[in-house]
Length: 437
Image (cartoon, rainbow, N blue to C red):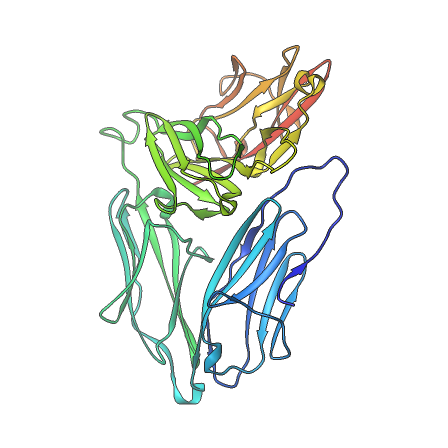
């Protein structure tokens, strides 16, 4: 069968449901007549996960010629002998109780390689050095017969499906265009060209010159890594009703905001509206449908670093009730009963989020805590208690607990933990600080 379900045991007391996520997407294939081809996808998420393969929108059944093999973490489609009818667009749909996600790639079928010409670069990529916020363009010329399939990579990973990148072919030249360069765009880019006769690769580096904020590097306002002063919260919504994620953020210069659904960029289309104003990022869903059930992430980035906040959206069950939900690290929603004992015990209204920052800048971890009586707060770094010092500031602002680290160094990188306690119990949250050069 093309649809396979693998049940797995659920830990006692565990009610969290993680939607499917894809760790390795399908990749486009160019096969030869009479030869084999194989698509593979790798994934994770709460079991059971239903895996369905489709070609041009129609479900594929496992047969002797087209064999589908699925495990709890991966699935493959092996076509033993290609003919022209196998060419088309292939899709894998992953479904569980928390959501649905798809990956798609094309398969083209060409004549045997003995009748073709392997890809060859007539003009190769060149290294670029670009001023931050300026445009950039990689360009090369590739020959090959049949026409090669093209894929771009950054730092060894497939280029994400993001509106900021423009992949085009113009007059025999293959181009990767950037309208507005960010510091995080720096890295090594690679183009891979494949056809039935072979493949060719070419790499080039993009260097980004950061803007200064004054007459000299030490003058002007100091860069501050982005952080979310309020996190996006899990949403439970009736089907067909509107929903809204919102988060407040800070950082200098003002961060660029991006939204993701199951790690795929959210675009201004299909019932989604994105806005950003006065330090608040908002994602509106006009009418929630089953396909909107997913993990959502908002990411803030500027030259000093990046920060993210994650939450799930689920539909109200047709019967029964949804328990109170609170955000947890990594985008999962932790569900708990609404009884008084649970409300009095220490719990997080918003947990810590991972932060990526530049050396020498200031970062702030923050969490919103609640409980009755008001819980005490303790911060730890790599398992050892933290106390206030010249470079470490610990404070409370209402229900918000804040840890501010000034002039971070490589020794500051690692895992930070907040522990909250009262006589009803304790709770913890952790997040990582990573530094870039």
